[in-house]
Length: 304
Ligand SMILES: [Zn+2]
Ligand SMILES: [Zn+2]
Image 1 (tube, protein in one colour):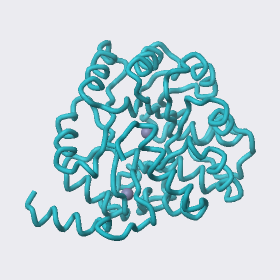
Image 2 (cartoon, rainbow, N blue to C red):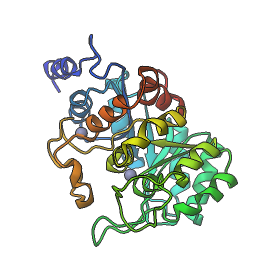
Image 3 (tube, rainbow, N blue to C red):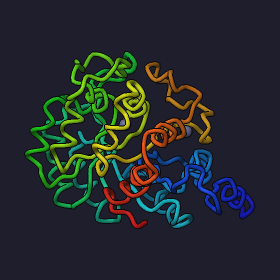
Image 4 (tube, helix red, strand yellow):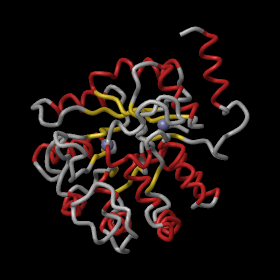
């Protein structure tokens, strides 16, 4: 990339003087794009200053190059791989020892309390890094399948692995903010029945955190406006912003929802912008700053 292109990308960022959201923002659920330009385009378009890059063990060379090129924009990264492979733990352990700040997002067709995941939870505790998990009980398409199933039993894992820091994300995690969730729909839009297990466990377990990313996170924050502000206040130190947005430019262009029919509500929109707007409308400036900047840095142990 030419110097001129970099300067244009920097100029679009707004962090040179103004902060579009009133606070610096780190996107903590940012799937690494193939090029530096692609990564910066989404960050700059959505008004974010930094991203925690979700990488794969096979893409870490790119990650390290992006971080070297733009250290202030990319302060850290996590690694994932297919956990059903027999060498998954060795690969992830080696990647953490080589610099990764976390493990994840882990998204394989296994039970969240099955043997593949248990060995990973133990490794994450041993390595002292958080693990980010995709919980999904309902397939989005006929062929997609489900991931880390059995979330309703996850309190047993939280108890069994007190030294593992878990970051929850995705459909089943967020649908369970409502006590009436029956693993039957991806994105419920009905008013939230108070006392859902996600809400309760965020209060009860010091080792459970959550990123507010994707249509699922946005859905939980918008389905029942009377729930949102109190929920954010209740878990001031446990929640942090991420987008999981696949749009190209931080304004919704391209396929922002990866063709997921259940997420059509946000088609053509940038999830980062949508969720930042909801967070801003439902929090004080201090709380917003925690949710979009401080908490992500703290949980993933990133230098501010
Ligand atoms: Zn996910
Ligand atoms: Zn976007």
